[in-house]
Length: 311
Image (cartoon, rainbow, N blue to C red; front, side, top):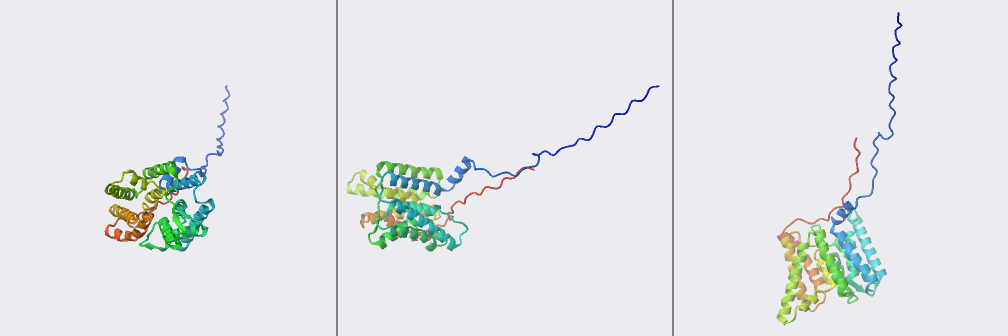
């Protein structure tokens, strides 16, 4: 008689130990990729303008020994930013945006000349304060740099002046290339007013030279100055102070070009460009009413969404 074999015991139940990495961890914030950062910087044309004007100012102070002093330049930039901050608080704006104030301050540093520090600081304060105080239908009338320069030149009785040609041919050519490159890279929404002004003003200068029997080198020399480049690429092309429609901007540019030529050659005012823009800026609301268009808004900074882990 055979003995039955013992039945094998069932295997013990498998014990699953918790895996330490099975629980999804929250995504840690990391540095933005370079391409994303470059895209954000290129999305706002003011970033490129600040880079160009700031580089030119640094090169002018340390490489060309411009008339502007370092302390005066720092005081003007600080005054402009402080005024922008004060205006933001008083107007109860949602956020402080220093970019436009930086552009105005850097342009003032490159153009304005005075022997008195307080006049330079007053020009910076007046330029930025005008944006908040002198407005029509939500838009400020004057370009800040243009308003501050013209107001201080008229009020100071010769103690504030503009120094247009002081950079030399090499720096001037490099600045021109950077200005043209900025229009291509940033696809500025107001490039049409720049080209319209250039075409209208150069046509008037060439026609005058032809009438007087002068060579073409004379009108070309008349536009070869730093003040002309800053005016053309940073003042008259300011999106916040130009007409809303393209037809209105072209009309405005031609009016400013005609007024500048008349002030310079009929009234013998070397600052005809600045005076023409200051006198014709109040016409912009009328042009907007006759030729309406979409009001320009500065692009808002992109806020990255928080990363979410997959369940």
